[in-house]
Image (cartoon, rainbow, N blue to C red):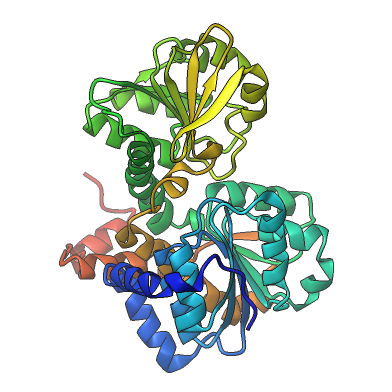
Length: 418
């Protein structure tokens, strides 16, 4: 078995942490138990490019229980938990190619190593795996029945490929499942982003001015959590509808050009490039803290910040100090990569439970339906989404109402009015 991890001596620590996360993932555990009996993924070869975390490890174990041969690589150079990577190799015999802090060259070499399995299915987080297959590994396409995508950013890329008629196999957009983006993106990103900022800086958020760029589900979550900790939250947006929502949710809304004058902490969650750039750096206060919680490290123009700076130093773990002419300091967290995974542990296991339940059941769905699907991006089937929600509620001890026969008939009728 081939693999490339940092240190196999970390495997025992990783095993315990994986078990801890697994205890908080009841829905995935139910799926894992069924998979172990039914083997719906038998003979499937899955190349997975995901954040190598304790929660991902539980997904890998579930896929393996279902009969799949799984190879895992990282979907971000700073998101790997090295003890988890080692444990998956030692205790689960899963090939892992991931090292926290790997350079860009190694990152792509690891993706290529994962593709050496000649996958029949891909599982992606950001579409780097799919993109590489479509550009440099086209020979693999004929053997692939389909794939899944975990993130907003990745879904956008894949839908663009489908629109241009270059997507070569069907993809299930796991991110579009309501049990994913309503919860993972909002509550998971909300909590873990704040966690990453605090771990990297140990600043007090109460009373500080935090600028949240983007009011999608991730931005909503961060703004909500920051507000709960007492921060004065400013939202920047380009979508007028989302801007109205942010204003009605009680947040200040203004352009970034205005927000930079008062902001103390900035976090980008837009999925777009150069959201914070030169003109913003020039207007920022001394001591401004900037970070990103979008998938790729392109939302902050780091190259320009480096060129503008007279001095750069690592002042704390995951905190780089850039000194501009005149002495103004700007602090960049986590190299501009996902702060919730670069400086913290990513989303809590209980919310990833639903996200990865979607991944596992979407893999099973693809096995059964791939021949009927076109080369397009598909949403997770509604029955899978609702089943996951029902299982999660049951695990939480929550019960809900059911429609009476009379109510069902009323909703189906056009004859009954006032």
